[in-house]
Length: 82
Image 1 (tube, rainbow, N blue to C red):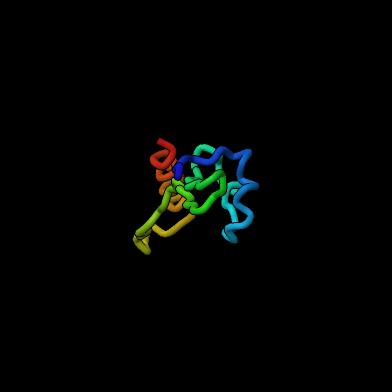
Image 2: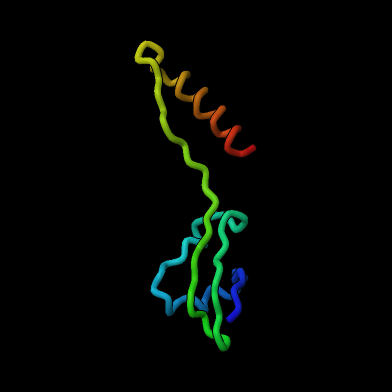
């Protein structure tokens, strides 16, 4: 048995697994599919996805306006890209 990261051009080999691929919807650098092969056949797979998750948004009701929201999201995006 061999465990390895499957190259994107080999994703067609996963059709028999019944798990839809996220690869077409995610940046190539943020997703990898690890497989186990036995005698050249994929016998197991798992997808590793790197994603940014924003959580716990709070805005003081007295400051709730488009400018506050825009500033908050713009700075959070900078942090996420870093």
